[in-house]
Image (spheres, rainbow, N blue to C red):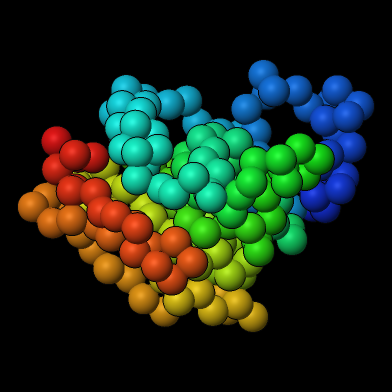
Length: 187
C-alpha cells in the first residue's frame, strides 16, 4: 500500500520556499492535504467579479478585502474566492489573515459544491470563522452559515438559504453593514 503524507502549514510554506510548489501549480492546503484547485468556468468567474464589485462598495474602510488569496488556519491554507478581514492592510505584510482576523469568507460553487459544503465547511467551522457563504450556482441560491462550533465535530449551527428576490445581509463582527440582492449575484 502506498504511503501518504499530511502536511502542516509550515511544511506547505517550505514547499513554496523551495520552489517545489509555485503559483502556477494552483493548489491549496486543506486539512493537511495538498489539493489542486479546479479551473474556473465562466459562471464562477463572472460571479466572483460581481462579488468583488459589490462588496468593495459596501464594506467599511476598516476592513481588508481579499479575492482568491490565502488565509492561514490551523491545518489548512485555503484560497477562498472572497475574504473580508479586519484591517488595516499593513497587518498582512508578513502573514496571511488567520482565524482571528477573518470576518467573512465566501466560496462560489459550481463544480465544487460538495467540497465547499464538506471539507471546506469543516475547516472554516473548526477555525471559528463567523460567517461563511456558499454562492450555490447550480441551485441558484446563496447559503449563509453562521454560529460556528469547533471541536471534534465542527459545523455551523445556523444555515440560511437566500433565493432570487431576497437580500443577503452582510454581517461583519456582529454588525450588519449592508446587503446584496441575490438577483445581483445570480441573474
